[in-house]
Amino acid sequence: MDAKEQRQTILAMLREARRRAKERGVEFSIRPEQIEWPSDGLCPIKKVYLEKNKGFVMANSPSLDRIRSDLGYLPGNVRVISWRMNNLKGDLTVDEAENLLLYMKGLI
Image 1 (cartoon, helix red, strand yellow):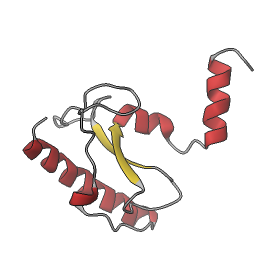
Image 2 (cartoon, rainbow, N blue to C red; image 1 turned 45 degrees about the horizontal axis):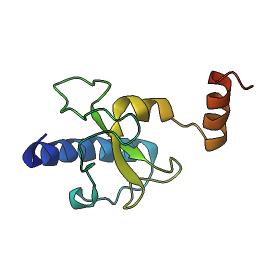
Image 3 (cartoon, rainbow, N blue to C red; image 1 turned 60 degrees about the vertical axis):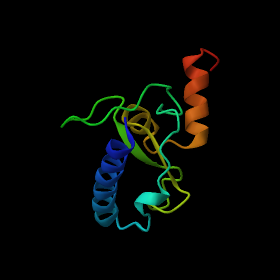
Image 4 (cartoon, rainbow, N blue to C red; image 1 turned 180 degrees about the vertical axis):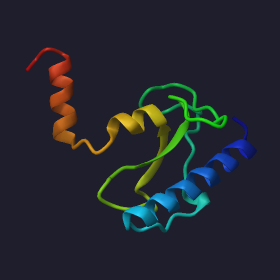
């Protein structure tokens, strides 16, 4: 994805994030220049290329993740990851995620 497409995608993600913040009553104070696009173009978790949304959400569509879900869309609390990883993360706590991983490995 070139720089122009990245900027357009960031602006679209911010429009949606602003709408969600208003719905949920959480703070929204982030600007486009405060969003860091992964330099290699890959989701930092799943290591798949982030692809521009083509009118529908795909597993590797870029998604704006709130690092701490209890906080709003604030500088330092957002990152770009794939929609699939963001959807899976949902509102899991770290303890829940660790226990899920242990369960999937057959350790509990």
